[in-house]
Amino acid sequence: MKCMYCGTPLSSIDYCSNCGADVTILKRIERISNLLYNEGLEKASVRDLSGAISCLKRSLKFNKENIDARNLLGLVYYETGEVVAALSEWVISKNICADNNAADIYISKLQSNKTKLDVINQTIKKYNQALEYCRQNDEDMAVIQLKRVLSQNSNLIKGYHLLALVYIKQQEYEKARKLLKKAAQIDTTNTTTLRYLHEVEEATGIGTNLGHRKYKRQVTPVEKEKKILGPTTYMSGNDTIIQPTPFRDSSSVATFINIFLGFLLGAAVIWFLAIPANTRKINQSANQQVTDANTKLAAESARVDSLEAEIEEYQAKVDEANQTMDAANDKADGYDVLLSAAAKFVAGDQTGAGTELAEVKADSLEGNAKTLYDTIMASVKSTIYATQYSEGANAYAAGDYDKAIEMLQKATQTDDSQYDAWYYLCFAYYNKGDTENADKTLAETIKKFPAYEATLSPYITDPAVLTQANGTTEETNADGTSDTPETSADGTLTAQDGSADANQYTDTDQYTDPNQYTDPNQYTDGTQNTW
Image 1 (cartoon, rainbow, N blue to C red):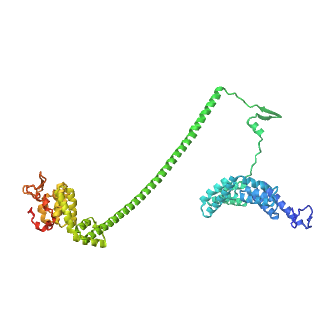
Image 2 (image 1 turned 30 degrees about the vertical axis):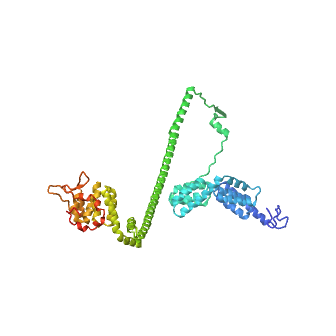
Image 3 (image 1 turned 180 degrees about the vertical axis):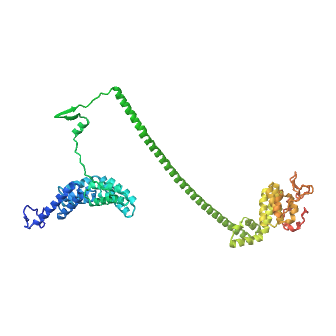
């Protein structure tokens, strides 16, 4: 002990040898601290841990530098499961006295086991979480957490108290009693434990026998060996009788049987325990692999579907862009051709202007371009029609019905009021053998030029087409035959009644000048077959 004034170590006299201060009270305080330490040591030795903690705390109040009291307090805290409090006391003790301090050994042993420190840290967190569950009235989760805490730190008195309190609230008094008895074995005089036990006894009307800890005498190894292998001894008066251990030599057959039975027992254990467990493990692993594979396959399939949908969306955008680009190109080409046609028209070349204008798609033009197209077309329409009709008629006369159809279709589109172009287009389809298009063209021609129905209707092979065109049916002769034309051996057209209504129109050489046929009004008589 040192002088509180100058720090000089004190001797047995009642004053400081250095400064001469009176240290009587200081030494008395030290004696009281040591007395309380001894009392706490006695209480700790009989597991009165609560009383020991109280005495040791009072001892440290008198003398905070009482290293023995502080180290013992840390040990008592550790025994009650309060590892953090114990470590705090040992650290303070080591800071007060770093040399020859038992606290250094305690700290080293505790820190050397990292796993134990982690477990202690987890138990503290779980206890705090259980306490929070209790405040939230979530008692089931609190019970689960506290059971985990006590399984990891079986000396934590607070854990036993809190779990017993939850059981008391749930009226499971026997479970609470069992926990409190365990807590009483750790700390025999803990007032919280005794108070909770008193509440359990009042609720159940049954007292609790805490009993006493029983200590068995340690059996020496020699005594244990004699008990297992040694002879049996007993007293007869003053004499000690030693009964020898019976020994019986087994035969070779018995030895072989025992070995055989041992093999059978081992095989049975393997068959009924090891193999099913291994098989179950293999099956579980295989099932897990299948599940993982299916999950991965489903994810990949979903990803593929998503990518395909994106591809389709992008392809639709590309197609739309291509269509827009084609329309723009067509429109630009149409404007170029229109400008070329306008230039030729201004130069007086109506034939060239008509040829250029025939290649323009009128639907693609807008605004002033459309107005210019209509103006030029109105002026060169007859020229374009005459050119297209002439080429179509010449092709018809030459037997090139495909070209005739192409040019005559253009002629009818240029001027659909000219009967001659429609007439040759009908019979171009007819002579080609395309009866479907021939019927449609004939019906459309009759609809546009009703005065020629008697001339054209006999060549329609499907009466329904004519009916749909004008609501009339095909006329038949008195003998039940119709006027459907037939092709003769020389390639000319004749009606079934023998008349040559269409033969006059097979030779187009005499009609090379289409201007003389521009007025269809002179052909109002459908029975007249000449111009």
